[in-house]
Length: 358
Image 1: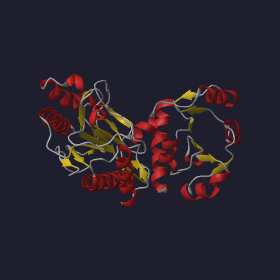
Image 2: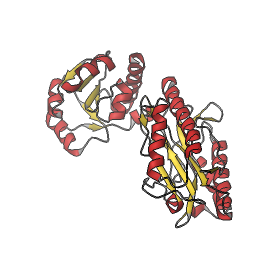
Image 3: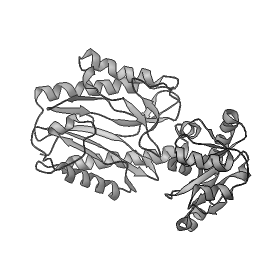
Image 4: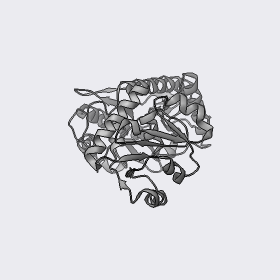
């Protein structure tokens, strides 16, 4: 992967030159460090200089072998006790820093190098457009997630708890080759299904309740995200059967709207309009979607206040929902990638309100 990471640093270098001039960038965000270097350890600083020969990564003694293996194209400074120590080991010259660097650390930089320039979110912008390797990992993570969901649907039983179901789903991810879950799995039944980010607890699955399953597998650092809503043990009641098709139609409308050049706001509006026409827009209480990649939430944001434009090879979720407090909720979510024309959905599986637990 070293040529890939070198290419990414080169693209960053060009953007930095245009944005802030010939300055080195101090990269401290873990996901950005991994994207630009391949390093997966928990403690590092990456410096991307005005020239490729200036690039260097700093970490601590725990990662001597790991950094040599994962970043064999980069010189390494094995001294990460303090930011000041790293700065002292770097060649002289002006620095710029990421927006996420703490005020305290900016003061450390200022004391040794002068007040740093805060760079725009260039790395995050680069990460929003996935390359071939990233799309392969995302597709794999989504495939594992889809297969695990289908297996779980056959294992749901009345009387299980949300927490038991969450642990079983995550076990399935591992059995299918995932390195980990993408995020704490959301298993929400009954009234809990009306809480978009409910934490799985000891609530028991009961016949006739809605069951929202929102989870994803992680492969090589890349996160999948998928949601299905099922009904437990019997055919749905009228109100349950009524709201699910509206969510499904809203999702289909948004996916049909996805194409390069569209604004994220337009895509959100395509889903929201369907729910508004059904008199349910106020029950859709969150944005339509978010980018996925090395983080479960990254650019682009797709929602009613989104400002960006959609480009080829962006990957993001489309996840409309309807939530009726005290009764239950429905959410349907898929991860997709933008193509030259339209999009390709990476998560697969039945989206209907299927009966499980029988």
